[in-house]
Image (cartoon, rainbow, N blue to C red; front, side, top):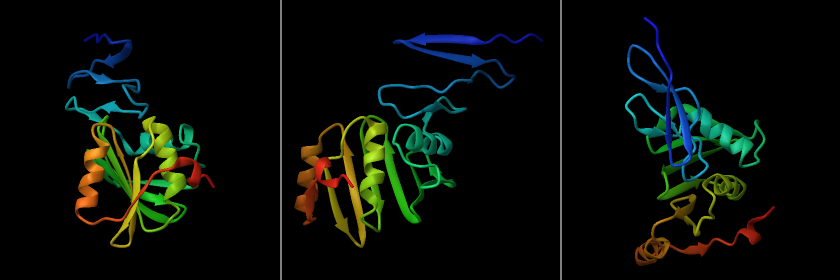
Length: 166
C-alpha cells in the first residue's frame, strides 16, 4: 500500500503529515503564536514535549545544555518539572494564557529570563510563598491576577527585568 504525505497550510504555517496505518502525524515541529516548539500529539492536542522544552531553553533561552534538565517522567499536558543548576523547579503552563515557574532559590531569575525569551513576553511578578519563589506570566489579565495575589496577602514584587540581570 502506497502512502502519501499530506501537507496542511494554515495562517502561514505549513505542516507535513506522514501517512501511517493509525492516521496522520506531524513530521516537523510546529510553531504557532508563541515560539514554544509545540507539537501535535496523537490525539490532535498541542503538546510541549520535554525534549522541545529543553531545546527551547538552550537554543532560544540562551542556557547552557548542562545547566538545565527536564525530567521526561514528570511532564504533563500543562507543565513539567526539572532542575536548573541542581535546583528543582516546576513550570505550569497554558499556551498563550499564563505560566508559573516555581523554585526554592533565587537562581530562578536566569531561568525565568530564559522562559521569557521563549514566551516572547516578560513575567509580571515574583513572590515567595511557603519556601518557594514563583514567577508569573499572564497574557490575558495580569492586573486581575495581581489583585488576586494581593487579596490573599501575598507579598509581591513587580518584575523589573533590568534589576534581575546578573
